[in-house]
Image (tube, rainbow, N blue to C red):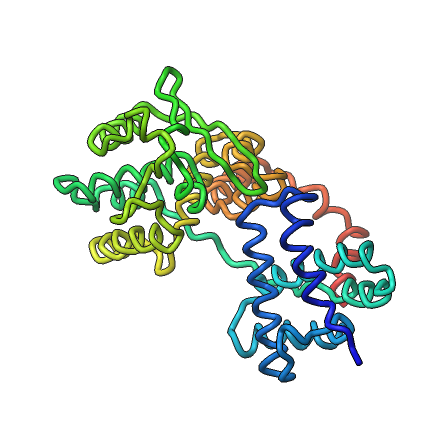
Length: 340
């Protein structure tokens, strides 16, 4: 009879290992938990195995591959989402191989499952005119319009993630010169981001109106919903969608068909890059772990690419000589042979 040990190790992984030993954030733990909720649902639907009766030896390589295919085919998940789920499963089995060495062979078989190559989608971002149009949409004659303007302009100006905006409290704001905001980001990392005077003026007016400058409200949500609780990611997304829809109706040429809260972050990064800000500074501004993550904006910046091509064409037009590689017959023959 198989021992039902999966529940024991999964509980220890989510409840002790991730928060205690690895110091993972609540959002990371929630993402891992969601992966295993889906896995348990898959085991019940496809194999008829209840969660409390599941044994580790039943979760082999074939089972995990079937689960990943189920995510894509039945639930319509993208390859990127599939890879996120696989990364969570790998992390669990990395933990398991030290806690239960008798399952080492099983762990190694799971590690051999490759990540799936995901389609590289183009970045959606707004031009400066698009951002101006979006921020003109909230009706500032109404209280909630002024709140929405403060929220959206702050998200753009600081390039923060939507969850980072939801987690803000008044204590995160420093009004003294130079004004800054403390953002608690992914992986429990905190970064200090400078704020422009214009943005600080909008934010301070909003906080004065809502009583958020008082010491007793320093730990309250900076952007509360109607119930006085902090917004969820979906709640902030709903606010953005409302104004994006209105802006798209007004100027469809400025607003892409698909636009999310994260695209505000993309927009800020692209505008900083186009202004000549070094990628290293943009990395720190956005809170990226590595500059390699930030390089995606350099690759996506069509404006800089066009300017570089125009500059190259201009230099070539002033030269009557052929480039050296075009006069090298041996090199030309070798390049042509590569395609055969």
